[in-house]
Length: 312
Ligand SMILES: NC(=O)C1=CN([C@@H]2O[C@H](COP(=O)(O)OP(=O)(O)OC[C@H]3O[C@@H](n4cnc5c(N)ncnc54)[C@H](O)[C@@H]3O)[C@@H](O)[C@H]2O)C=CC1
Ligand SMILES: O=C(CO)COP(=O)(O)O
Image (cartoon, rainbow, N blue to C red; front, side, top):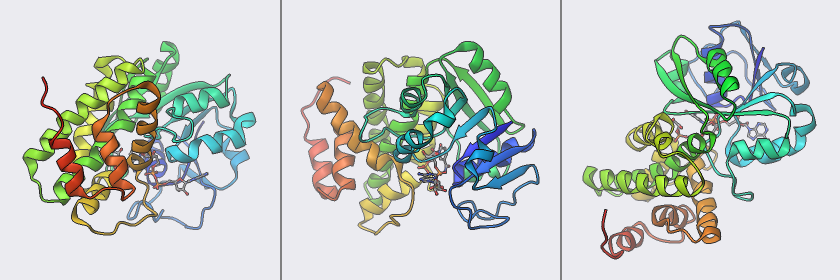
């Protein structure tokens, strides 16, 4: 049995895709909707999905997908560690915890030392998955045999999973691309043009790979679906909330604060990581200051453009 914890857009979309293979339980802390999840409008839920707010019922499954926002995951795991430990836990969160400065897999491993820890990430908008459009993702688990089993269990007709044992690389790609997507959105929102966006994507990718290598990720993981693939998607699509948040910043427009924008807190986490480890992450630093309203778009761009000239 599979249970998905977190009945937001992504948890619901995964439930729809996996319901093609068998029963799925979708847990949310407050289910105040029926039939159609307002976070995923226009999507009817198949009968194979049981929607519940009963965590005990959801935790009867052996495989648990954690589809909570990255900044909520640590506290959730702390609260429920005793019941979650020993299970196979697959996180879909794309962010770095601001307090603990780690990604979801480390949060799980620390809270639940006996759990099998995996990450499901890669270029995939919830709405695309739910509409049955084809999607390719990365399933990362350090134990090769568990990775293979999960790849089989979580692949679905329109959900094609590739596997890797590089959990660190896979989750860093997903977290860091959100920061670059905010920067790319800002460039477009400010009317700086597609050439500037290509520059920010490329230099952002350089920053991603530098940091990922420093944290022990394999370079080839960053060029795969979970890194370059997801970076490309989120920096070029209005469907991305991180991109739209950046575009609002760039255009000086307000943005709905209830929207999940993982890149904003992750940029702040990266600033702290950079200070801790003596790293230079200029794009993340710029995004953190922009998102906090500490600097104008003009000043931020001027600062990036005036950095000393160097080799590519
Ligand atoms: N929406 C998308 O297209 C994709 C999202 N993701 C990732 O999946 C994660 C979740 O994103 P979405 O589902 O899109 O966000 P969302 O904003 O649609 O939903 C988040 C859900 O988490 C719930 N939640 C928040 N705190 C909670 C807590 N303490 N306990 C229980 N439930 C809690 C909220 O009530 C909400 O239902 C994020 O890290 C995101 O980056 C990954 C791939 C695609
Ligand atoms: O991660 C995503 C697509 O792969 C979703 O991106 P946003 O959170 O920016 O909407």
